[in-house]
Length: 183
Image 1 (cartoon, rainbow, N blue to C red):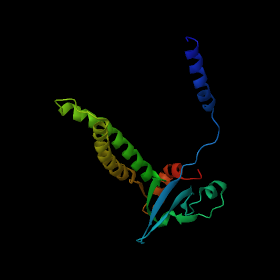
Image 2 (spheres, helix red, strand yellow):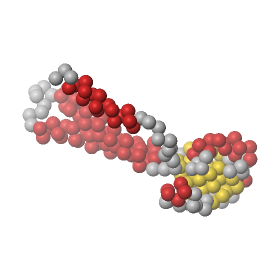
Image 3 (cartoon, rainbow, N blue to C red):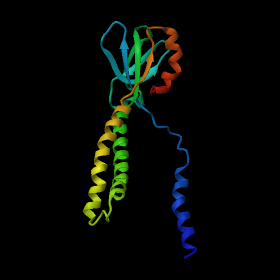
Image 4 (cartoon, helix red, strand yellow):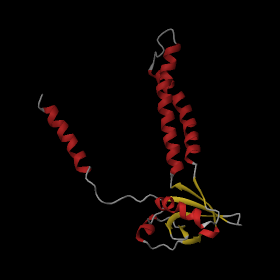
């Protein structure tokens, strides 16, 4: 029995050491961009494709394989036409809502039975149904609150003012390149 435990641990950790090798391929992160144009109430939307010397390229294609192979025709917007660039990671709101919902459910599920036990003078859980209701009701309530909070937090965008100035655009170029598909 003493030999089985160390052998089992080594066998379980062996696949982890194999997966720790660097594969050399880096996952591409996609960022949505909203560009406000000077003297125009509308905005240009798309994936932030490339930052050039004096312009920003946006792609409005939603097929991600086209971006990786380079078969897209992005829209170039000159710096003199750009008022503000807003950037947000693709699918950030959905991930934030899910994270808030799961966190709220876990906190509600843990705190529900603890609150019931603190206020009870007799054994609080006579049946499994009573215990389940003390977990599910606060868990569901805090899951709703957590999803709302996660949606609000996830909806924030990075705001980069350019105001048609080449100096402001040039100062923000490295920051913008971090968010573009083609670096």
